[in-house]
View 1 (tube, one colour):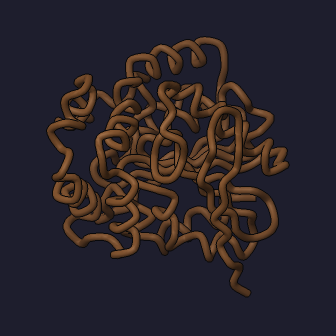
View 2 (spheres, rainbow, N blue to C red; view 1 turned 120 degrees about the vertical axis):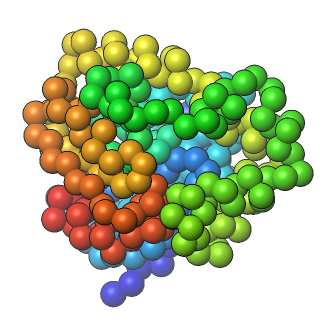
Length: 275
């Protein structure tokens, strides 16, 4: 039985969050990255919703969620997730995150462990934790972090720029037209670009937050990493010293945007892992 996807606006703290909610059963919270919206998960939501309540929000400042003037660090976005769970009357959720969603998901699990049933982190480093020394930061990390520059350079050329990420993130295979359209809508205009790049400008603060929590805490819940190209098994090696119950997977021949590039393989990994 298929479940209709309800896209709604939920007031959570200072944000009006654009969020898709579908299905019944244990909750699964899906946190996307850049340049994504909740539609990143469209290919896997129907399978997950057969047995779970799937919650897929647009992150702070991205997609249809409030372009907040500040708060783009990992801990604040983790707190956004807690506020969203509260607003939906969900006590706990398994958390699945990719790319920019990974540091907030990690902070959510470390600082609100009572809210996280299981944790899945995909295709992103966890800040400066050791173990990923072989992974070189891509050029756009620096470009996006320059205050005020990329949003003004890219205005009017958003589609060409975003297509680069959607193509390279699928190893040239491309994404569904509906997802591409959602991305271009969500990231067009100076304000939307600005809030997207604020996530990158928060990386130094994220690094401090991640180092602080790993000095005093561990991941106690079952945790899984899923790598593809280019991150591979780097996240697994980063988390190994800090996780009580960790399994790592790498999808061969898969691009960075796993939920679009190899959705069936992703579902095959998630289904036996989620409660």
